[in-house]
Image 1 (tube, rainbow, N blue to C red):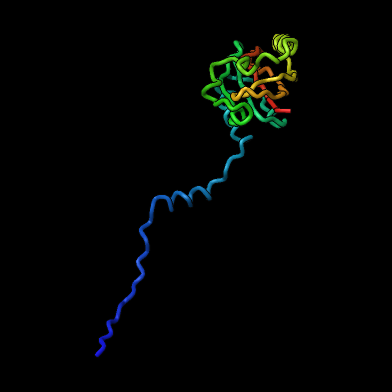
Image 2 (cartoon, rainbow, N blue to C red):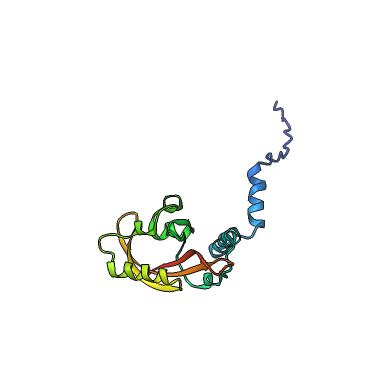
Length: 163
């Protein structure tokens, strides 16, 4: 004689994990574009250093941004800097952009950049720079002096593009 056992199948939902809640919150927040992040960061520095300069130059096409003080020391670089050069932002901060130059960088081009910085006017120049892996690339640099409320230059912003 066969006895049939009746099994009652019940559905037990899996416990809710924190990841489930987190994933939902990711899709509810709009993801900021890199240009928007750059603008927000520079707007922070604008308020911190009391710049009178507008940040409308960010509408131009660029791969990397480099913010320096008057001593040409890097204060901030955007995420595109690492992508273009291979150097992390933490490595670059506190250094002068000259660490990107090497033996084949034109001395005349460097003199032109120095001369234009002293004129305190926006300018564009091209330099042969070196990446972290020592490969070189031609970089078009557009530099804008940033003025404080006394109309004195307090910082420089370089928009860089690999060409």
